[in-house]
Structures are given as C-alpha cells and as structure tokens.
Amino acid sequence: MALFGTDGARGVANQTLTVGLAMDIARGAARELGRPARVLIGRDTRVSGSMLEAALAAGLTESGIDVLLAGMVPTPALAYLIGAMGANAGIMISASHNPPEYNGIKLIDQQGKKWEPELEARVEDAIRSRDWPDPDPAQVGRIFHYEEVAVAQYRRHLLSIFAGRIPAWPIVLDVAHGAASATAPQVFEALGVPVTVLHPEPLGELINVQCGATHPEALREAVLSRGARLGLAFDGDADRVIAVDGSGRIVDGDEILFVLATQLKAAGHLADDRVVATVMSNLGLERALERSGIRLERTPVGDRWVAKAMREQEAVLGGEQSGHVILKQWTETGDGVLTGLALVAAVAEAGLTLEEAVAPVERYPQILRNVRLEAPVSDWKVIAGLAEAVKEAEAALGEEGRVLIRPSGTEPLLRIMLEGRDVDLINQWAHRLETGVREALESAEA
Image (cartoon, rainbow, N blue to C red):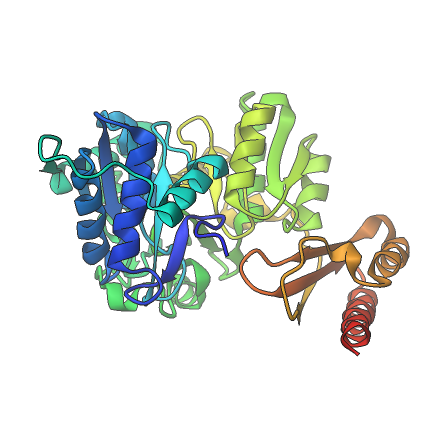
C-alpha cells in the first residue's frame, strides 16, 4: 500500500505513523530538496504533534536542512507562510478531520501546494531503499523557533484582506479544539465581530470529537439559542468550514461555493464563469449555477484534484462538498477561516441573509451505499453486469439524476452514489445496484 494518500501520509500516531517513519519521510524529503534548504514545520493540536515535529526536525537537520518551527497553526496558514517566510518547502503535521489518535504528515511546496504524486512517490522509493546520503558532521541543519511570529503573521494576512468588509453581526465559531483556536476568534474579534466560541481550548485529545465541521450539531444549537446571524465550524487543521444559517440550517461546501461564485460573477471576477468541484457535489449546485450563468467542472474526489483542475483551467474558485474551498485570489489550498470570512463578506455585500443567499440551491436527495470488497479494485467496470445496470439506472433517472460508482481510495469498498429528485426511484436503483454487486462478487468467489 502507498505511504502517501490523497492528503499526505496518515495513520494512528505511535503505531502506524511512528517516530521512525517520520524521520524517514524527512530524510526522503531532504533528498529531493537538496542542500541548502529551509523547511517550515507546523502542527495542529494533537498530542502526538510535538513528538512527530521533533522527529521530522531531527531527520531534516541530520540531512543538512534548516528547520523553521511555526508551532500550532492551521494547514492553510503554513501554506501561506512558506513563501512569506522564505522557506523552500513546508511540512504540516495533522490528520485534519480524523479522530485524535490519528495524525498525518503532509509535504507542501514553496507555492503552498501539496507535493505532486510523482515527488511523493520518489520519497516513498527512497524510504524503501534507504537511499539517502550518510549524515555529514560538517553539514548539520539548524532549528529556528518562530511559533509566536508565524501565527501572528497569518492573522495579519487575513486582516489585510477583510478589513472594512465584515459586518458586526453576532456569529458563533466552533474551532473544534483545533488549530483554528489560534486564528479564527482573534481575527473575527479584531474585525469588530461579537463572537461566541465553542470548544475553544486547543486540546489535542478532544480535537474533532463531536464538534467542528464534521459534527455541526453543537454549532446549530448555539446559533439558535443565542440568536446569532450565522455560525462557522472548522475542522482540526482549519482547512475546511461548514456554516449554519440563522434558522439553524446547515450550509455545506456546495452552498458556500454557490454564494462565493455568484458574488465573484457579479463583481466581474469569476474567470470564464467557471467553478471547479468534485463528482460528489450535489446536482442542485450544478443546476443553481447554470441558472446564474456559471459552468461547473467536476473532478475526482479530493482537494488535490480540485486544485490541479483549477490550475489547468485557470479557474479562480473551486472546492468540495465537505467544506474545502480554494479562493485562488489569495491561496492555493483550502482555508476554512479565509473561506468563512469571504462567505460573511459576500452575504453582507449582497445585502442578504445567509438563508436568502443559499436559497437558489435546491439540494437533490443523495443516497450512498458501500459494498465491502475482498480486495481493492481500480476499475469497477470489471464487476460483472455492473456497467449495464448503471446505464439502465442513468436512463431511468434521466436529466434529473445521476449515478456515481467509485472505489474508495482508502478502504476495500465500492461506493455507490445515486442522486435525483425522486427519492423512491433513487432508493429503488440504489438497492438494485448494491444487490447486483453483491451477487456478482458472490458468484465470482464460488
């Protein structure tokens, strides 16, 4: 199995993601960077973050690379700070929205983008073959501490973008005991916003636990009980955001994309009237964008592919239903705090409430079924009869529905997603497709 997935190397800290592996990743990355080089390291609040930070710093300095420690920062802050602080690359220690026991190591280039898969593959090859120079006593890297400076510089960056654009609406922020605790409340308050902050303590043992972007229920309750104008929930490393409007309705990444796209188009800043999203984005988003004269381009699942398509198509806006949104004007990666600020600014500048701004998006019902496989498959069309059944389902759903079959990128699962206006019809076809897959797999095993 590959070490690097769609979002870096991840695993249970101190079990599958060990100190030894972290040092090896650092050595492999150093081999690609060459000397001299400076690498900026950041981490979220997870308990294992400091341990992995020390291991990465040791592996880099052993290889003659200087290390700049940013401390606890959001992933998008690190992406911005690499260039701003004159580093050659960055390493973020975070498992994003995953539970506290997990952690991850993400390699980021000088432009704030994830390393290309080809580069990650070379690091993996180096780790397997132990192919890097022996430590040189005359070439030892140094470690510099920028913990206070780094997060303050990122906050100033956000303030410079949104000064004078954010109304003094009462807003609730759920920072999920994560990295947003060091940035979101401080920036909103500096902009004059009265905020209520949920789960504010940077407690790594509680990061993402029944809170934040993956669990917006607490945010919804707080918005309603406090009469707030809206709420914003971030995940552990603050690269995604989910909103709640004043009525308590959860607003996902699709609807956030719609609000930002229409605002950019109205201002004449939406290049080629194009937005990039993944195959998982709701058909309701696509239809709402069409009515606004905006074209939706779809990519495979993963913000890596969204970012790649945006570069190739020179798009300025893209994202995922999960709340990863890339605003190319300011960043090359998903930034939850920046997106939350941009959402508030867009709604205010349109003279609307968030409820009114997202009203044109009529979400189509979606059904997702997972079928466990004995072994991962790269092409679902090898499953007997499935391609023909999908064509039948697509014909039955017509223009008002769609079928998406895809193997999971992380587990031996086949994911079957159907979407359409007619709930009974998509339920019927979801059952037929799932049953057909299970029967085909049983026949193949017999």
